[in-house]
Image 1: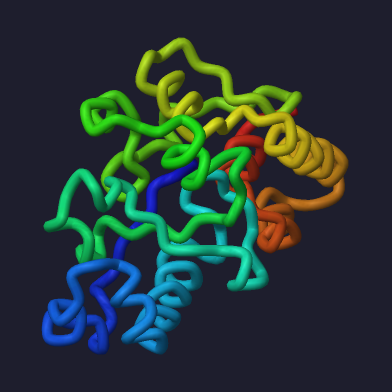
Image 2 (image 1 turned 90 degrees about the horizontal axis):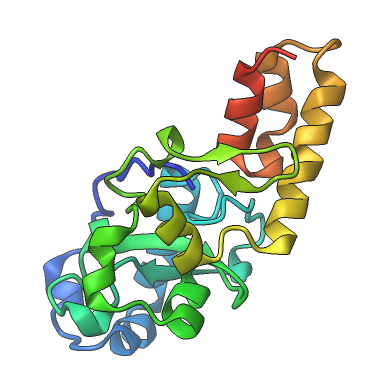
Length: 198
């Protein structure tokens, strides 16, 4: 997980449109073009095609959805708030769907986890050589738990990237490694291992 630099919302995403809807489903159905444009803008321009929670690279937009970081049922005000939107992968084993449907985050727990929209999460996460996030900090541990960020699949993907970086180390500069792995996702893992001396 890493910090998402939110941009200004799209001109088409304005109060006149969505205020006609009281539910997210209404907005999704009635303003489908605006909804899709919103998802793509966030995914490409704000998140550089990576899931906002897991950092999986998303090259097929159909594999993603707009997640309300703070669930809609906890705040009507944030239902149509651009700064509450994170594009996430459609996977129930980790990420947004895990947070909402498996873990079932409670309103009171948001204070105990990192928000990638406002927190510099990358400063707190350390990825070991096996692709596991290691940290004793309680907020890091709770964030890992809520989003299931140490899922075996995620660990294995991160481990493969770390192995690639190690293989490139004597052949390429850190910048060239970052460029070569740009569409592999897991930018915070790449950044961490391109800083370290091996």
